[in-house]
Every structure is written in structure tokens, then in C-alpha cells.
Amino acid sequence: QPSGSSKAPKPSFSKQDLQHYEESDFSWSKEVQAKLSSVFQLSKFRPLQQAAINLSMSGKDLFLVMPTGRGKSLCYQLPALCSKGFTLVISPLVSLMEDQLMSLKSKNVSAVTLNASSSKEDSKRVLAGMIDKNSPFKLLYVTPEKIAKSKLLMSKLEKAYNMGLLARIAVDEVHCCSQWGHDFRPDYKLLGILKRQFPNVPLVGLTATATSNVLKDCQKILCVQDPITLTAPFNRPNLYYEVRFKDNTDCTDQIAALIRGRYKNQSGIVYVFSQKDAEVVATDLQKRDILAQPYHANMEPSDKSLVHQRWSSKKIQVVVATVAFGMGIDKADVRFVIHHTISKSIENYYQESGRAGRDDAPADCIVFYGFMDIFRISTMVVMDNTGQQKLHNMIAYCQNVDRCRRAMMAIHFDEVWNDEECNQMCDVCRHGNDYITMDITQHARDVVEVVEMAGSMDEKLTPLKVCETWMGKGPAKRRKMIKVTSLSRLEVESIIIHLLLHGYFSEDFSFTPYTTHFYLKLGRKASLLKNDGHSITMKMKRVVSHDTVKKVSKSAGEKSSAKVEGKRPADSDYKKSVAKKVKTLP
Ligand code: ADP
Ligand code: MG
Ligand code: ZN
Image (cartoon, rainbow, N blue to C red; front, side, top):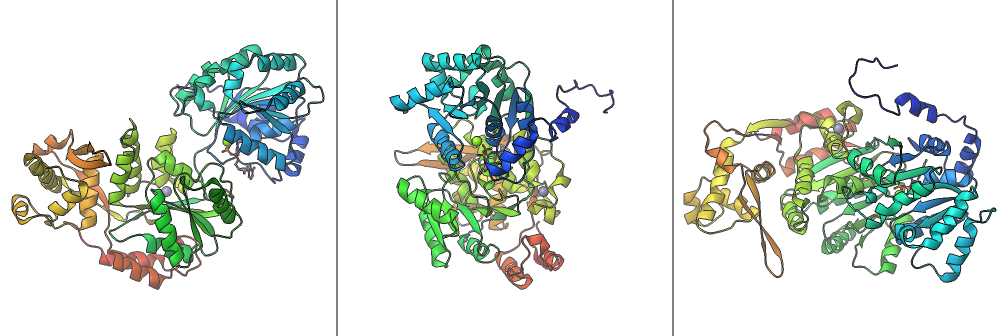
């Protein structure tokens, strides 16, 4: 029992309460367990599933927050099969409903839908089934629009309720209720009618992404009195997170080496920035004898599903995909997700990389972080009010050299993270202390001056131009006017990005009819550099030249069977030899 000294209000649902619901000695437990294996063909529950099911079976109202792909559906589908009557499921998209219906059909679970595209006969059958004591279906999927617009549906629900046949209400993607959430749907706002009309029917709201504020809002909108909220930790302990610098060479060679070496015969995804990249990278990998195919939004639906199928059945090893490859991917044994280009936000990265290792076996998530990619993405998200901030967070994740990668993610899920729980399953925790702290104040002054000088000549500089000018690659007359740096290209890039993230530079977009240009301009903090006392420090990864890394990794054995870097037998030697060759920074 916790001591009463803490000032925080007592949570209405404590750890002890949760433990009680993790048990399997409820009156329904035997049936639940039996159907888990006979119907769903699953051997055991994942974290929180059992508790969620027991709570819902006990008649409690519940909000369940769990990352995508962890198995939220089971938490209402299984109770539906173990209850009298049917469960009403509200789902925002017809396509999502169809996926679910298909998967349920393959398990011989009777489930139906009512939506705008249902035929008259189908609707009639469904509406009649709702008030049939023999319940010809256990789950009824509807869109929120249907609830809002169809009096006929509401009248049948009421009748079913009075007959004791409305077992449960599940609101999928429940964050859509709230305007504070990220994809607000007006019709979700009207769903409060359900709990007002059917107060005795337990409701479960499900979402992958909701902060506590959003949930509070949803609770109010849905008119749920006192729901219990279960939040699955965002952490995926079996995923190894790693960031690699993309230097000026293309990273396709490195990616190919990984796929043919460490991931031989294992399935994975390579995420790329654009449709064109998907085609190009897929071709490049094919040239290196890798069974890879592209996937992007501009392909014929039949081609898309063909690629998906081939990959699912291991006829091809890799899908080279844009973010269009996402919804409906249900492959459990994905061993690697490699990002050829960074994602546009940490949330996106978490989702995309999270498609690895759904079978709970170890899997790798590697992102290749390149300077020029930043600006491609930046111009792509230019219309989004929070686009730049989200991108900055993603960049900060990649620039980070001293904090657990999971800690960087936790911030975005309102979670407190204890680095030890990482178990060395990220590159920073595993190779810790491989960085130096550098005073970059003078460098910052110099490069800010480069941009200032261009401005005074009415000229705008792209980030690439800033790099080149600062490194002395511009016209001679300009070289004379600035202080050319002796830093390496990677250092120059890192410093420019650091200054952008910290407000010394900022984005300066310019639109032409064909494209959006990205220039650097002085940020709100640039003037601080004029103060003598102002200083900027930056943590930087030790810079190892590409050659060194290659040589070392060959001798230490890319062929080694160990799954992840740190388990290399020669790891300490590796570190030493790298350390010897690092360039000492000024
Ligand atoms: P979510 O709605 O949380 O994104 P889904 O309910 O669609 O996730 O489930 C994703 C996948 O996880 C499904 O293929 C499902 O079969 C699988 N799954 C669910 N529960 C378990 C479990 N206990 N063990 C193994 N796989 C599971
Ligand atoms: Mg879902
Ligand atoms: Zn870590």
C-alpha cells in the first residue's frame, strides 16, 4: 500500500485495481480463453488486453490507449463473442470496417456493417437482425454519420437495448471526437447520444494517440461518467533504434549490404521520400540482387495488392515504399524497417518503424539521416501549421547523441522514460559516450555572417549554398568577404542544423508556380551572437570517416551472426580502433 504522504490526488484506478483485472478467474474467463485460441488462433494475451477485456466484461466504461498494431480490436471483439446480443462498433472509415469484416469472416465470426454504401436488402436484413433474439451477428460496424443521420437505426438500437441485446458499444479511433486531436470528425461529436440513451451499456473507446487532455474532451463529448483509462506503454522493447549519418554518398550501398548480410532471408521495409525514390531505390536494390519492389500511392490498386501479397508470402524480401504503405499491413515477422529518408515527425517515425517486430521477436529500426533530405521534407510540409515544429523534433531525434532514443520518443507520448529500461536497445545506450561537447560560438558567428552578407547583397542562400560558401567553395570575391571554415562537411552540416533547431537560423520559403524553395535566413536568436557573453555548445558525434567505418566493419565481420552491432564479438576492439581514428575537433 503506498504511503499517504504524496500530495497527488489518489488515482481512481490504481495499480492494485489493475492487477485484479489481470486475473483469469472471472466467470467468463474460461470462455474468453477458449475463444482466444479457437477463434482468434492466438496463444496468449498481450499487455493490457486481458485487463481491458475483464473490465469491459464487468460492465465498466473504458478508454484504451495502445499503439497501432498492438491489438486493440481483440479487446472488444472477444467480449462480443462471449456476450448475449451484439456489439455496436463505431469506425470512422468504410475501408477500415471492410478490413475488419474480412478478417472476422476468415475467423468465421459473423459481423455486419451499415454504411452509406449498404444496399437496401442488406440494410433491411441488418436492422431485422438487431432485434432478433438469436442474434445472427455478434458485431455491427457503423460509421458515426449513420448514428447521426439514421432515425431508423436509432429506433432499432433502442428496441435492442430494451430487449437486452445491445451488449456493448465500441468507439474506434475515439480521438476523432475531440477538436484537440489530430483528425477531428464532426459526426463523432454527436456520439454522446449513445450513452445518454443507453446508459447501462458499457462503452469502450480505442485510440493509438491521445493525450490526457484529448481523452478528457472525449469523455465529455461521449457523456461517459467515470471511465477507466488504460494506457499501454509506448515502448516496444524488442525494437532496436539506430540513426546513421548519410554522408554525401548515396546510402543505398549500405542498405543493400545490410539486407544481404544481417537481414539475409528476412522480410523488411525500406521507407523512402517520394514515388520516384521508391522506383529508383527499388531498381538499385534489384541491381544488387535483392528481391525488392516499389510501393506508392500512384500505382494501380491491383499492382499494390500484388506487391503486398508477394511480400507477405516471402516471394520478395523488401518493399521500397512511401508512407502510402501502411494501413492494413499485418505482417508479424518484419525484421527491419530502414528509413532511406527521415520521417516528417516523430509520431510518423514511431508508426512507420513500429511495423517491425510485431511478433515480439527482435527487429531493427534504422534511419538514414541526411542533410539535404531535411529541406525536401520541410518544403513538403510547408502548408501544415505545425509541420516545421514536428520536423524539428524529428531532426532533434536524429541529431541527438547523448540521450536514449526512447527518451526522445517518450516526450511525444507524454510519458516519463527511464533510460535503463532501454536495455541497450538503441545505438546511444549501446555505444554511449561516443560524442564530444563542442563550443561552437565562433563557428556560429562565422556562418551567421555568411548568411548576413548574402542578405546585404540581396541574395538568398539555400542551405547547400551556405555550406559551400562557408567552406570556401563560392566565387573568389565572396571568399574574401567571409571567414572560410576548416570544419568537415558533416560538421558544417551539423552546426547549421543545430542553429536552425535553436532559432539562430530560420526557414525562408519562396514559392514559384512549380516548386517551393527553401532558403536560410537569420532567426530570432541570431542577434544574441553579437553579445560577447553569449555562447553556444553542441554535442556532436565523433566524426569517423566513411573509409574507416567500412574497413573496421569488414574486419569485425558484417558476416557475424550477431543480430545487432553491440553484440559483435570484436565490439570493444571496434570502438578502440574507431576512437584512434577520430578527428579531434577544434
Ligand atoms: P490496433 O487496432 O491496435 O492497431 P489490431 O487490433 O488491428 O491493432 O491488431 C493488429 C494485429 O495484432 C492483428 O493482426 C492481430 O491479430 C494481432 N494481435 C492482436 N492480439 C494479439 C495477441 N495477443 N497475440 C498476437 N497477435 C495479436
Ligand atoms: Mg485498430
Ligand atoms: Zn536507449
